[in-house]
Image (cartoon, rainbow, N blue to C red; front, side, top):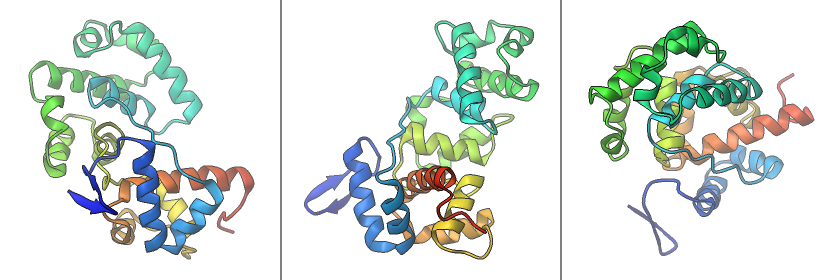
Length: 223
């Protein structure tokens, strides 16, 4: 664990105090983080339970607007009661599609539920596993890729240094905040994000918040 001003930190983002601690460190490290923070303020915590429901919500929301994702998730949650792997597997594809889920997302949700049921995904263990082991377990499930694994690590496990270099909004926000001539590729963003260690999870939250405010105000958008 690291020690910051006498406070021992677990390596996980658990509270708004952790966000503020991370932002203090990031402001010292990076002018782009200071610019983003000055415009958008402290980013939200955005923590979810590190279980099947949290993973399912990420799968449902992938590549959708926030409003569409919330609407489809609400209908999915209403269908599967109580929400869990067994409840989801008890429903046929047509019923799940009726909630607005695409065929691909139904297949991925079903594959994840099957992995939970047969023990391949044991969330209690995964929440304590090193990042490589967590990623390997998740991406071994059909339909789950690196982005989903990164977002699960960031918001469900809450690892403070988790990051999602493949996220398009993070790439655009980094281009804006750092005044880059072009949007960085995932590999380029991963290199850039090394400067934000060990608080890349807070940096990502900051960039998303900055992206949202910049789009709403047209401030800092690439020309």
